[in-house]
Image 1 (cartoon, each protein chain N blue to C red):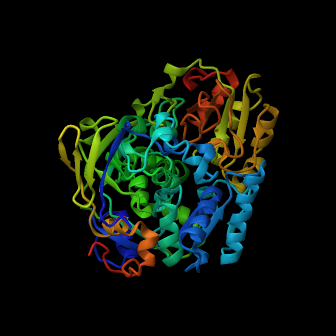
Image 2 (image 1 turned 90 degrees about the vertical axis):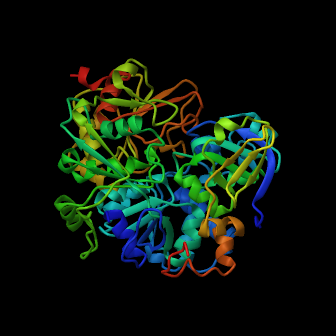
Image 3 (image 1 turned 135 degrees about the vertical axis):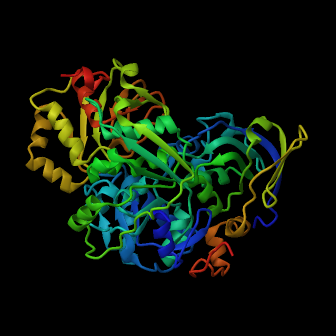
Length: 420
Length: 176
């Protein structure tokens, strides 16, 4: 069995599972942002008819989309979620400004290798970088089986091995590699499957950079993604998990795959995902010169400390282009504080950037990130469907923090290899 | 509720890789179903929310309902009154959520090329069969089994739980 199969077997009380089995697994943690906690609490009330929650200590709410509600409806969404939490004894509520859902869960140490975490958003797959099985489920699954019994049903997925080797070229980031995989394998390249990321390139990455790969697995249609845990995983868990003891599940030596793909990352250049979907990936040189109005480094796929450091390196002593609004959204309050201590926040402010409270940023136009007709944004966000951020004719380009940073300085999409 | 799982209706055909954003517009996600239902899939076909009739059938291509999980997407489809959704294959979130909310869905490889909007279709979900009554072509899909079928028959996961089904809470294999 591989890591995912071992975790599913243990959590469902079985010695062995094989792809295709349907299992009922015990869940360690259920995590929701404000939009999903609101929808889930409605399903709990209206469809289930209320009741008691089996284990409220395993539920986490993080309010990351409505960071500072500007409308009564948005404010009441949060009021509903807070009331729901109070009524049912849910104590792990991280209110506005705490940060982006999964990064808050990671920062607070609410996880450990060997566990299962479910969320109601597609990026719940991030924990696969840390030796966990995690995925997104629907609101009714969360209510009926999760809240009711601390369980979820899963079909054990087939696994595709993605082997990455080589060294990144100048101006190229791990984010470009993840986007390349979406573009190359396609948005339906791994539907229902597990993606295992492996090879010398993955092994050499920091845990923070490794997270991008399971995180973006959903954009290939996958159920989950993972990296077989190693000594880096153990060290990170010892330093950041609040669990002193945990189970480390690793692949058996004889695991088999449904398919195997291999990439030499040194052949990949900086990439930009263009409208209408994240699969519309183009080399940056093909879109260089497109004027932009907003540049954003932040959110679940771009507000990590590493991203802020990259931005700081480019903005140090510079001014953001006069036609650009530069937005910085740290992924958590802890990252915000560390960026402050490192002097990055001062660099951003001196460069003319706006620093926003930690949260989901412009992931969708809930509390920020709306554009008018014809406007364009380049960001580190994970989604770019027209209409997600204001006018259907506003355009969203997705790229690495490096490409976003250099584009903010020039006012147009810019190839980082051409920037000085 | 859906005990029969046999449907006959007119086809609305959509393309490949339709994201949930296109099924349910972002700015309406928290606005209530009455408003949402007027805009379902309008980004793909503006006529659909205006003219869809109860009992109509959606046929999509590959990876229908991809991208954001957005569990409200299958609920909005169900709220339009459509009877069943067919696709070459679904995104895993829509496949999962469809069964859980009792929206009949069926994967039928080859269906996309075999139908056009306006064709009359007959679908037997339990047997996994789709028939184009306009052309006479019959295609076999992947019939749901085990508790996926149980969920569809009960009208969803929560109705199934309320009906007293206990195997969800046991450590036993739910495939039986």
